[in-house]
Image (cartoon, rainbow, N blue to C red; front, side, top):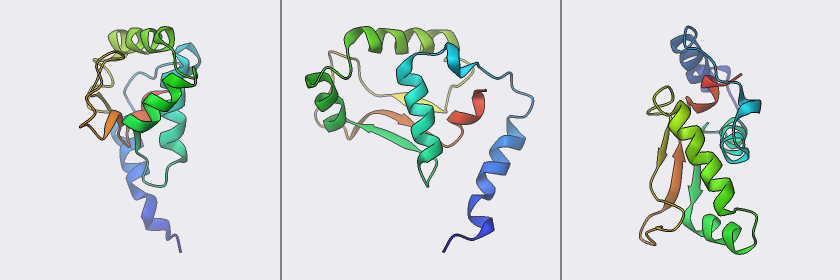
Length: 114
C-alpha cells in the first residue's frame, strides 16, 4: 500500500530546484527524453540503463551511434546544470562488461526539465 509520505522526496526535490532554470525537454535528444520519462515512471524515481539493455538495443538498432551523439551533445550543453542528476559510465564504443549500467539517472533528473 502506498502511503502519502512515500513520495515526500518528490516535493523536497521540487522545492530544492524551484529556482533552477528549466530545460525544454522537447529540445533534447530522444535518449535523454527517454531517461527522464523512465525516471518519472519508476517507483523509486531512478533509472538504470543496464549494460545488457544497451547491447540489446544497439544490436536491434533501436539505439544508434547518432542517437548517442545527440545525447552526448545534450550532456555537453546541459551537463553543468544537471550535474549529479545523471552519470554516464561508458562511451558508445567502450562499454565495460563488468559494469551494471551504462547510465544512472537519479531522482532529481526529471525536475530539471519542463
